[in-house]
Image (cartoon, rainbow, N blue to C red; front, side):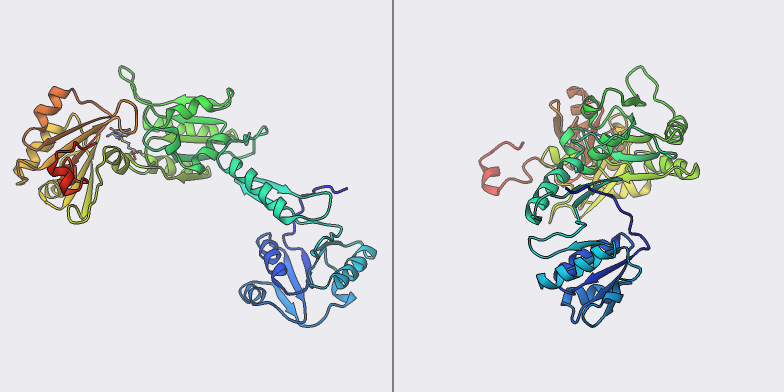
Length: 411
Ligand code: SAH
C-alpha cells in the first residue's frame, strides 16, 4: 500500500545515485522544489552534466558508498543496474531513509508522482502496483487538461489570509474566445466583478454561491464609478477572497485595467493580469477585415472615439497605408469624418463599421468617408461597434481577383 504524501524538500539534502537521463529528469524537479542535491556516479550523461553545470547540484565522481547517505532525507537511485539499485534501497531501509528506486518494475519506499499544477493546486498520480510511468503520465495529462480549463471544482472552501485579484480579459463575447487561463481563474474565483461587454455567458456557468457583481453600464443605469470598482476589488481581496475582474476584450486596452492594477498594488493586494483578445483586432476580423495587410496597410492606429481628435489621429486617417480603428466611436463618427476630410483623406477612403462582432447580432456596414455618416444613420448603427478607416475595410479585399471580377459578395 502506498500513501501519497506531499513532502517539502526545500533546503533538504537529497542524494541521487547514478548520473543517467532518469536522474536528469528527476533532478530538474528536485531542483525546482529547492532541494539540495548531490549526485554520486562514476559518469554523467550529457543532459545531467548540463544541469549540474547550470545549477546548485553537485557531483561526486565515483561509485556510491554507505557514508554518502549520512544526513540525507531522501535517496533517488537510478544506476541502470537493478541489483545496485536494490542494494542502495536496502541500505536506505536499514537506515530509515526514504528511497525512490527508478529501476524498471521496481519501486522503493517512496515514489515520485506524475504531477500537474494549476495555480496553487497540485495533483499527483501514483500506483499501488508496479510503476507504469506512461499510464501515470497519460492520466496526469487528462486531469491536467481539465484543471487548466477550470472544468473541475477548483474553488477554495477555506479563504486564505490575503486574497488576490485577477484582471481577466474575456475577449469580444463568445465563451470560447476567453483564454484557458482566464477560465481556470474564473473556476477558482469567489467573487466575479463583471462588465456588460465580454463573455457574460460564462457567468451562468459559475457555482451558484459565487458572488457576481455587475458594474457595467446599461441603458438608463449609471455605471459604477471607477474609484468604487477599485475599492470593491481591494475590499473583497482583503477579506481573503479570490476576485476576478472580468473585462471585455483585453484589460489594458481602454479597459482602465491599469488603474485597477495600481489600486491593488497601492493597497498591497496581489494582482495578476490575464490578456484577452481585444476588439481592436478581433471585431474587424469577425467581418473578414485584417487590420494590417501586406501591400495595403502597414500600420495600425487605435483611438478612443470619446477622446479629443489628436494630430496623430488626423495623420493616421489621412495616411493611405495606415488602418485607424476607433472604439466607442459611433457618436463621434461625424466629428471623425470631418477631421479626416480636413486632414486630406480622399472621399472614397473605405470605412467599415462592425457592430456586436462575434455575436449572433453581428452587422457590418461598408461605406466610404463621404457616405458613412448618412449610411450609418440610415442603418441605425449603435454601440458596441468598432469603426475601421482605411483600405483594409474595402469589401472584397481578401477575394481573389477573379472572384472580384465575378462579383462574388464578400462576407
Ligand atoms: N477592453 C476592450 C475595449 C473596451 S472599450 C477591448 O480590448 O476590446 C468598449 C468598446 O469596445 C466598445 O465601445 C466597442 O467599440 C468595442 N467593443 C467591444 N466588444 C465589442 C464587440 N463584440 N463588437 C463590437 N465592438 C466591441
